[in-house]
Amino acid sequence: MYGITPFERRGFDLFDAFRDFDNDFFGDLRGVKTDIKDKGDKYVLEAELPGFEKEDIKIDITGGTLTLSAERSSEKTDENKNEGYIRRERRQGSYRRSFDLSGVDAEKIAAEYKNGVLYLDLPKKQAQAPTSRRLEIKG
Image 1 (cartoon, rainbow, N blue to C red):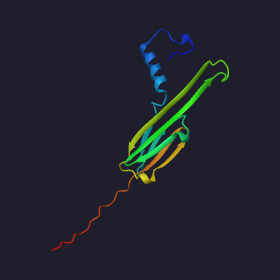
Image 2 (image 1 turned 90 degrees about the vertical axis):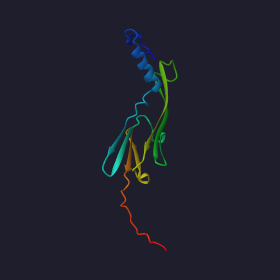
Image 3 (image 1 turned 60 degrees about the horizontal axis):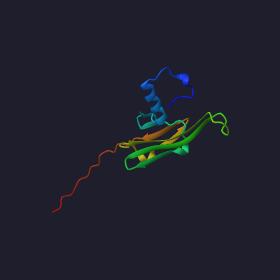
């Protein structure tokens, strides 16, 4: 919660302490940004997932819901790994978000992950013209 250098702070500020706790507890997973664009014949979902490997990301479709989840654990080390640690951090976290697929052709969804951003092409369902038929009257 506090840095190694005691001179970084000028007095105690409750809001700084809360912000530090918030950042340490939630890390950078809480702020995953997701944008959805309407491109006419499809929607494009862009989810920023920096630091994740493609293998850490799962996309599941169940019924009319798409669930995006990602999980990682990493270790950050400063100085020499084998001697006198100055700082050593381990980070674990997961991200999960669900989206309604109403109006989306779930069979044609495509995904691509590059440069820390997941792109999903969500083709819109084609509007079907109403069908008509004539019933025969029996009797």
